[in-house]
Length: 94
Image (cartoon, rainbow, N blue to C red; front, side):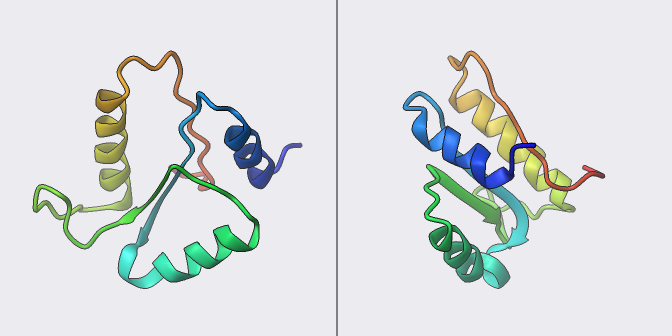
């Protein structure tokens, strides 16, 4: 079985892939530790996205799922020419 770290490493090698770390963890509480974790594994992401207290349009997200759905909708609209988008979720219930 391929680990999440190995999947990121494969994505890093693909020049036509956008590598995104998306988490519902709060920016205020988790940004530093996530940066340290990523650095310790020598991983490179094009985007590291944590749940903000207030969104770019002054919205407040009712849940992690709401935040992720909003983010993914914007991502799909921004990269509408993409042939494929793969999402690997680490939480079974989402």
